[in-house]
Length: 369
Image (cartoon, rainbow, N blue to C red; front, side, top):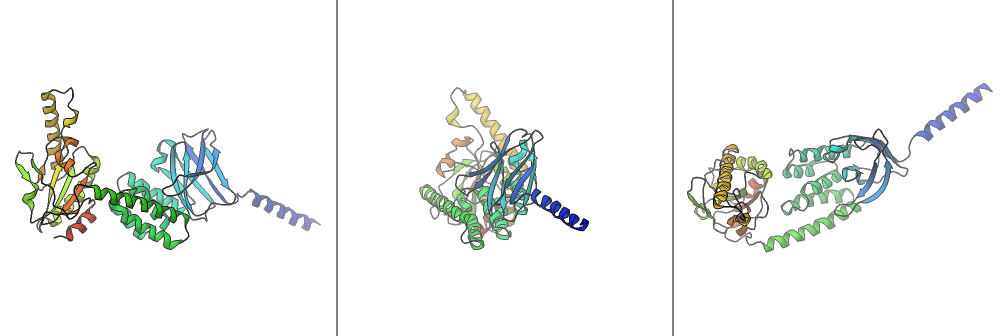
């Protein structure tokens, strides 16, 4: 009889332990600074609005827990508090996912993730992108080498968005995603999104004044020393026409790439013609005296010269009319954002209207040397 009671007791204990184990998938953790708020989980479709799946209260110590008894299918999800969110990439096998962080840095992916290796990989890459440790070219390499097509696709989408010059990278990400799961709803949404941005990019390119295969419009402006320099004088060389400014953070971040390619090919028929958008915009001179405008332009010139030296831009062709966004070449070439670079062949014809990153610049250059 005692033996029977022991067996029953053990069975009851095991049943109790089993019943305390959450079924399906649970997302839990602690978010400091989010005490007594609510946390949401949304399903994400690339290029479409997210769908709220569930929500839970965050307690007075910042702890939260959301359980999905039926589990969560493979896909992309938001873990969101108000407008601040991080993305999770799930493969469908996860049981308990722990996400800890601080609400003030939540959307910077300054978080700790356990229980989802793909989500952890995405967070690491997203953090590197935000810290400018991962370039668009690095994203392309990641897409080509990652063992998780879903992470690769979503990272490409996050990092490259609707940037026309990098559509090819996103298309490679899509192909890997489709190969992994031909019936994927995410892949279908991604394909639809890429189709739209590709059409937009083609339309944008066709409306540009400066187009591939056409002569590069002349630029004739002074250098910092006052010497006039003409773009047409560089015929016979392959030229990277680079629009930038000392005040432009992304430009300064791109300069090491430009310098690397220049130093490698400067003795092989390649050079750079840099147009600075430093200075003062004539369209904003209302209320300013001629002396104030002159002083502002001089400050812009000094910043320009200092940036040339600081970034080791050692090629001789640096020009500017010191009119900021009112610069005549920017209007002629349709430049609405910088950095922006065009490749011009030895005959003076435009062969590329937007090249960035050392690998892309070098690849385009080698076609025309």
